[in-house]
Length: 221
Image 1 (cartoon, rainbow, N blue to C red):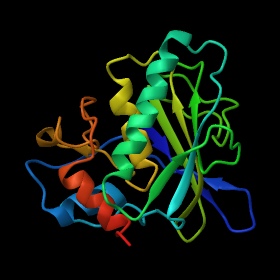
Image 2 (cartoon, rainbow, N blue to C red; image 1 turned 90 degrees about the vertical axis):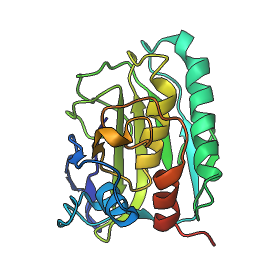
Image 3 (tube, rainbow, N blue to C red; image 1 turned 180 degrees about the vertical axis):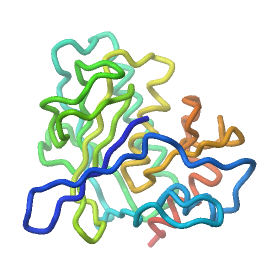
């Protein structure tokens, strides 16, 4: 999925954009250290980070599903609702030191979920907390952070042409990555094994090294 993380400079509302459109290539099962570094800073095995890791400081984050834009298929809304609840549950039961709470009435929620009237390949326009002109996939994420790599707010867009089959995995992937796991894994070994697999939209659980990485990024209290 495409994503972008503008850097909101201290005292200035001037975003600097970076992209991770492509996964970091590797092969076979990675060590836990390599997996974590690849997911959080884009480091190839034995290589340097592409950027500093990003964290949320607050241990409790709020999530709000916004009203769908006109043009988003109404028939998809019940499954979208279920997919969001399932994704939140997966993250909350991983035993990490971060908890997500859904409150659709909170307009100032930390992370907004937006069912958009856009299709894969379109560019963002007038999406809350998203800069215009960003080309999207069926899911798209944008996180704002301070100059010290601390996340302040985020937004997740779900495209109108997402398939019912892909929705649960895409929702979990975008929510998981909004917590700081910004890079996909270009590695076929992780297809069906990790929510971060670049070429797979079948994973719907946070297990194995995904769980390890979440607990390392946000150590249990």
